Image 1: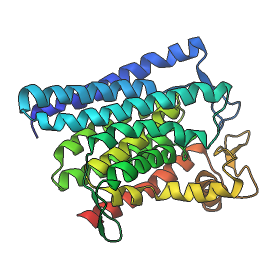
Image 2: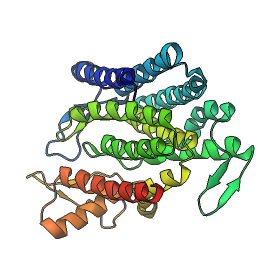
Image 3: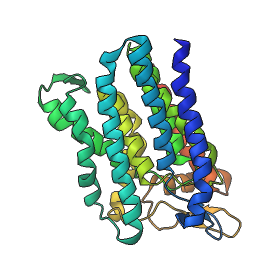
Length: 328
């Protein structure tokens, strides 16, 4: 690895860390805060964590573009990098709008996937990735790949990643695990530049989770979740890792299936007791987080918010290990 490539990693981590630290008191001062629903008293926590994360990602990717252009002479990679960045920027803006309007007006569930479709356009018109996909068997989709599979992948991944959320450290932790796994596979399959993109994102997420881990000082928000989901889809498209991405999304399929029992009308939060423990909030199990509450309570007797997060992240790590072994 060229030592110069450490620069984008340092920039992504440092920028996210500094911007997040600066944003937290500003958010409290101007009233951009939300209730932490899994704690007694529902303390107020800074919102819109996706904004400082975006700053770190942009800083890291753009510095990588600069190194490619002026030092490594890998300008051919920049075309894909700018398509990737356009998708990230559009999806982050859409998530930001959802964060703002969601508080006051409320976006319906069917509206959210439609709003994320424009974010797929840069990747569609760039015609990046291989048109052959291998899930159960290898199929060459030709022009149908950029026109149909790419938007379905980006819209599905961004909205899916937004579903499994609401617990301190959960969204950032899932992003770290999934993107790290895809980065390892990208490097192993000879796509080191895609691996570099993943490392830049992971370093930004590590900086963010420092503030988002229990007890959280900042929430991710929809700009964060839409953005990370879209990044996962873009990495899968660029690195021909669709099968791996589908496999790593198993917890999200589970959440969708459980959530459909309530027609997606329930929240993932637990029922908070005075001592800070959590109970299942509904008679039915309608969310993966609620399922984990039931399982952990049977094992330990008491369940805390951090237990739920760690259990889901552990499950995702197991899936990641299996996914790596299947590829390597």
